[in-house]
Image (cartoon, rainbow, N blue to C red; front, side, top):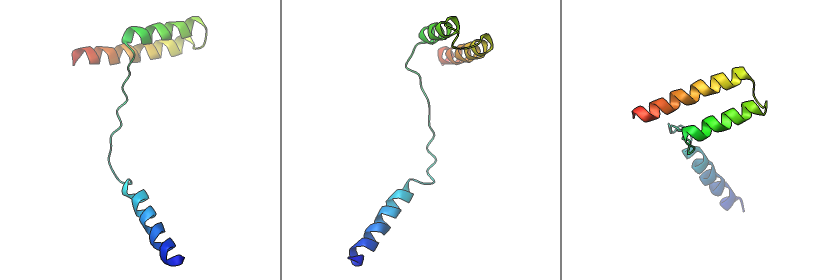
Length: 72
């Protein structure tokens, strides 16, 4: 039994570690339009789910991202 178990465990460990150390860069993309994001943000402010400060910060971030997207 151990003749099969130990090599099997070694294979599993090697496969599990093979993904370690890779330098994959994760890119987050949004499928929503800038207008939809801004509308959702305004709805969150109107429903008092977020504060004016949070709204202003998120609004600036959306506008910067959309401006960069348009420039590309």
